[in-house]
Length: 424
Image 1 (spheres, rainbow, N blue to C red):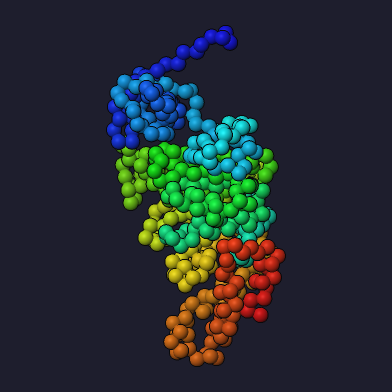
Image 2: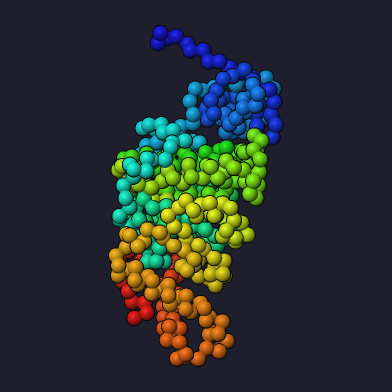
């Protein structure tokens, strides 16, 4: 029996329309991986994404070069899995978990299903401990807990990737898992060598699927990174998951949905996009042991913070950090707009003194912003409003506190000490 060769039922490619491969003669489940044999080339992996009459619809996980009608299609009997293990640390992988850095295939301790279900809500431990990010503006006013999920919302070119690199280098997490979904090819190396650096990479796993890769591979990169983070969480580690960006993940799912005939809805996004977002974002957080603290970037369309993807993601996550082009234009980095940002768990995990100090900083910043035009043209008279007087006196100190060079770190204790001195 052990030496017997198992026969797999095979089918044939009928036609290729756009991104979709139509195959006949096979019986496979949604999500099952199939291999398309191409003479003279490596087999092309593909995933079952739908059915039409008796035809199976496949989306390729690789290039379709060389595929023609009649190519053999063989179901593999399983869904996509990701190799996991400690050997992944320091490695750069593609969207399917294969090496991108020229190194050997990582030694896998196990294979994790890519499409894992989120943890049972009652199996999650409550969030009670602070995770220091090393970024003053976040630690002081948007305090993040171990197992919390935060979104970083901004337009293009405002500093999302730089902020992610700072958090990856300076946070108190045990392991970083970084997913670069739909990024420009140049930016991947720039992020790894410039923003992340050798020290950050040594305790990180980077999963990159650039914008030229097939839509399904870009989609799976987010799930592969989540599966790797889940492995380290199951080992009892505190994991930091950084994903750039959820918007490009949604765009990849839109391509898949439109290709198989889904009707477009809000701004062309298909209904499956909004069904898939919670399945991805709810996988991070606390587990029975270990935690995944997640930062997801959202590239807002036209700097509109209420566009469909931003609105949907903001409703799922435990807080949002808003970066504005106005602050970036003033050379204020990281360009975090404290007044538009919020951490929903800060009142529960930070002590009362810090919450009051952060509230005072927000109050002073809001008072200054409301009268900024009058102050700039010299129309405001000192003494007219004690609240504004205090804001004017403290403003330079607040800006110095919130600004931070990308190579500068601040411990949580140093941040608390500096916060206590503002406005006193």
